[in-house]
Amino acid sequence: MRWVSIFAAMLCSLILFFLVQVTMMPPSIALDFGTYGMGGRTYLRGGGDKDGGDGRSARSTRRSAPRVPRHAFNATALLECDHLVVVAGHAVTVSESLDGVEREDSSWYLLPYQREQDLPGTFVSHIERGVAIAARDQRALLIFSGGQTRADAGPRSEAVSYWLVGEHFGWWGHPAVSSRATTEEHAKDSFQNLLFSICRFREVTSRYPSRITVVGYSFKRDRFVGLHRAALGFPAARFEYVGLQPSRGSRFDLNEASRGEQENAVKLFESDPYGCHDRALLGKRIMRDPFHRTEPYKLSCPEIARLLEWCGPGGFPESLPWT
Image (cartoon, rainbow, N blue to C red; front, side):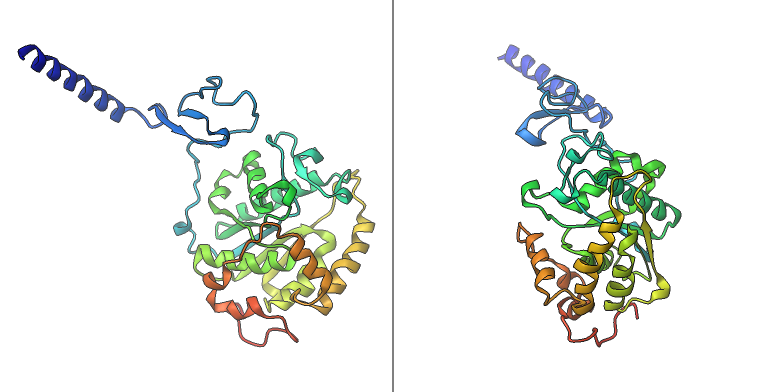
């Protein structure tokens, strides 16, 4: 029995020594076994994975996220934000790697008419401009807006795709912007991009924006400024639209896009500002909601619940938090 007692005491000492050593290790070194990521593989956080030891699967080239973000998002630090910067999404990324996302059509889920138009570079330029605007104003909240719009792409949202592109490029030298950048993942058209982003701003900051800047295509200026802003009653003096042209040498047909904008968007929203009645506008919203998601904004933005339901006739007749 004496030897059993001695052995037990030695075993307890070894266990205690091991626990003390692990407790004193830096988090980046301590072994933390866990099953996470696609495929359910077991990884060692701070080490490699069982597929190869270098932190990457042999079958995947997807870039891993930073272990410890240097500028983590913290909503409680954003209560003083009063400037909403919106970047409206136009497509979903589908590539496992974001290398070449600014050049390759294959990095995005594009409809046939969108292909071979050099759109990837345009999408990335919108994201970059939104980041630059937010970097200049410490009271700006950057919101990428766009839902899970394509069934074939899976439940990936345009908004998260844009956020990941920003992260991929290191926020173009403004990494602190990531602490003031978030997503709005329910919008299915441009009117909802604006309205739902206002609500998302309210969810994060507990207030409505006093200023709004929207980044988008130059040919969509009239739609956002003259129609969507007006339908929401937001003061023109506190609303800015930053319209970007396709890069020089781009294959994008700006003239054709401008004609389509007038026929397929401006005229429709002129007769149906809230997108409730026109068959084409409703059809787009239905088509862009393949996963049947429900917007939460009537609960999180009770002050404008009636606006969220308003379909006319005429403009919204009641006062709003920004008027």
